[in-house]
Amino acid sequence: MLIRTLSALLLAASFGQAAFAASVELPVPRQTIHPGSEISHQDLIERKFPSRTAQQFAVSTHRGELVGMVARRTLLPGQPIPVKAVEKQVLVRRGEPARLVFQEQGLVIVMQVEALQNGGAGSFVRVRNVDSGQVVSGRVQNDGTIRVEN
Image (tube, rainbow, N blue to C red; front, side, top):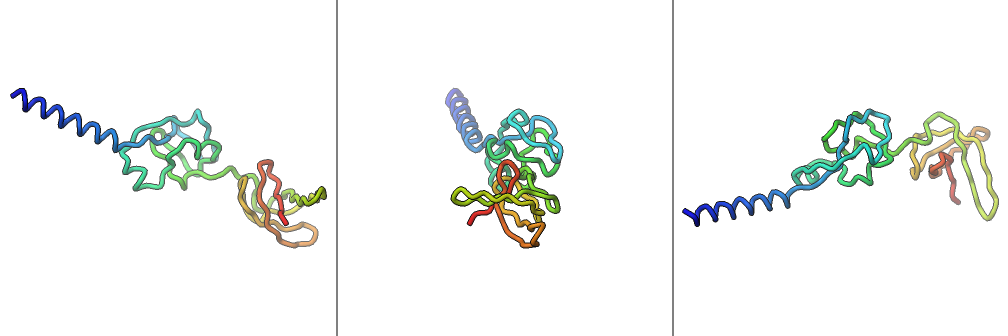
């Protein structure tokens, strides 16, 4: 009888360790995050899920990849955050004026352009020179300007 009890306890403990090893901690919202809201560290907590959750669904697995992003849709508390549910903060909006900066060997040219695409920091967008109508591409900077590289 004692041997059966001990073997049952060992078996239960091994299943418990296997279940523990087969889990993953994912960042989830602490409270509802509405579309257009920027996500901060305080908005997120960690919660354990079966490891297959991260394997089967395209969800964010690290807090660092979410902080500073903007919610594209409502994010519910305690639920994993799908990768497609967040995006970089839009600094340049299609149809709105923007500043294009060209820098080379001490020469700096700044001109007014119209953005042809939305873009966040680090993304490439196409813009049109308001005076000449010429279309060029540049990388959106953290301050919202668009930098053209030669």
